[in-house]
Each structure stands twice: as structure tokens, then as C-alpha cells.
Length: 107
Length: 107
Image (cartoon, rainbow over all chains, first blue to last red; front, side, top):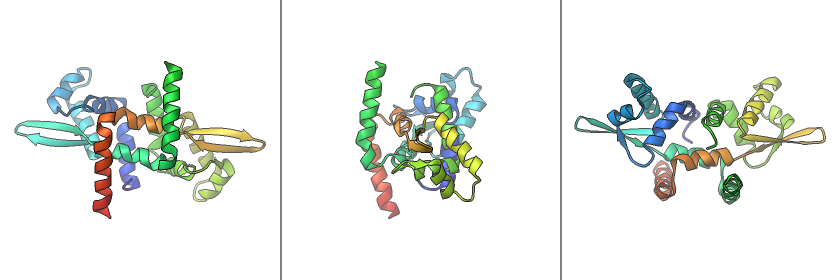
């Protein structure tokens, strides 16, 4: 984890369900700002753009400009750093096992 | 991830740097509430207990009572679920490689 200020920005960005939904939308492939605006018709354009900016300021979205389009890429590195902060090498296998067990119990 | 309400609770709990410090303190082994209060002399006892309760409500701390002591255990499962939500099997290797590269560049 870089610094606690960075962590504050990351967790505050993730604390909003619409911002998490935006990250879900670009998990598998980047999307343009226009595509994201179209995917969330219940939110007005300016609010979607504001959410994208909060995510970019937190380092969770990396924007790339191509001509007139702005492509929003997920940056998974801060999310991996959250994981590594509290789940060390030692705990990794135990946590994976518990996670599979939980999935099996819920299935 | 169980539900978006659970996610809200988790990220709001993690958005405070003192609560993150409490999780750091119990990462390797559980601590009693008294031990945690002693570790954060700059925060008063009631505030530490309130932070512990917020973390427990979010499922990040699992308390276990033993006699008169309350042992606070880290529950890493919600943290693994954050990771798995945005880092799929496909991205895992790429993200690990980027993380090692970043560490190497910063060293």
C-alpha cells in the first residue's frame, strides 16, 4: 500500500455502489465514457463522469485517450494491494479453502 | 460478494485509517480489546471499542469471548472477495507480475 492518503481515496471511491458497478462494467474490457453513460441510464451523464473521475483520482481507473474517445481501463493493482495487505502468504491457502467451502455450503 | 449492502459496510469500515490500523494489528494474531486499546494510546478507549464494533458489523473482525476476555480475530474472507470480484483468474498472473515489477522499480 503506497500511503494512507492513497488508501483513503481508494476505499472512499469503493464505498459507493454505483462506482463499484462502474468497475464491474470495465472488469473484462475497457469502455469509453460514452459507453458507460449508456450503461447507467438511471444516472445522469455528469454524475457518471464525476464517478469516473473519483475512480481515476483513486487510481482504480486509468483513462486512455484515443482520438475523440476516452477509454476507461480498470487498474487492478490497488485491489491486489488491499488483498496483500491483510492476506499474507501464510494465510492465502487457508482463506482460499474457506472461500471454496463457503461457496460449496451456499450452493 | 454477498450483497451491495454488505459491500457498503465493508468499504465504509475500511475507509478510516484507524480502523485499517486495527486490522493491521490483528493480521498475524488475534488481540484482546484491552490489548488493542493499549496499542492506540492516542485514541480513547470508547473510540477504539466503537471502531472494533464497526469492523465486526462489517464482518472484518470476528470476536470470540474467552472468560472475561474478548479476542478479536481478523476475518480475511471479505477481503478475498474484494480481490476476486475485480481480479479474475485470467488477470491474476498479469496483476501479480505488475505488482512485482512495481516493487522492483520502487526498490
